[in-house]
Image (tube, rainbow, N blue to C red; front, top):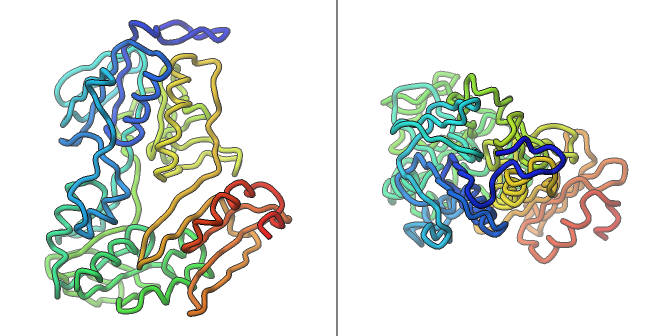
Length: 390
């Protein structure tokens, strides 16, 4: 490794040693990007999971619905020349000695990429509760979604809606509890969320409902009600695991703070995917961008930064994500704010069709329901006059 001054490479492209902590999409894409950029040195991936990298979106969709049993990524370790160490969890980091501490021992590095993702939040209480983050989570939950099962889902945002979709299709009796006033309200705002209510027909959707804990006898609500359940699924968000980075010198907030080149506060260390709280000009802040598209596309910038710390491509795309729920495909591009102007269009049945956010005549975000044909136009229009959508 060199100092990186005047655009010099910080990583020896022929003999350098790169360690990637995390075994998901971002890690797989980063390995491929390094090889595309002619890096021929050593790459070692440390994954806490016991299975090779896989795609997460199908877990709450095709896997949970029983349409497939796995979702492997195209990650050929032999072809890429990557050492994959499964079941290896990082527990500490010494950036001065350039060493990752794992449960199995120490792993030295010349350059480091952190792509550890995030961990689902859980509710208080000693009762059993499922989350949906890993392949094992999806397969275990699928076994419990049987006809007649009493399924209580806590959280009516993306995961909650997709689990409710699968549970209803499996013939379960589904109750969904949401702290906010509307489903998806926390992500999209109450007006847009209200327009999705018709989708929840056949599900006991209870909004403005606070959950106190999950106990052996069921879900305890703040008003004293206890809901008996055969299956409890908690979908109230995720949080990056930052504890192992204590005393590493890497700046963190809710995630690892990075710039638009995935660089952390420590030279030679990049972060990408759900763990990264990346600077974005779209809001003028550091944001956690916990979407598949971000994890997939950040790898090019991260690889370039490891090879040349001073110069390289910026990564600050218009955010995009999608969700399949209740037989509909939602697609969203942009970043809207709470005070943006909002126009909501509804379908013939009164349910959500389209939402458009703008500020001072500038398009900030667009959401379409089964409107894939309009996505490209909307994506290119974000940041320009809202009239471009006409």
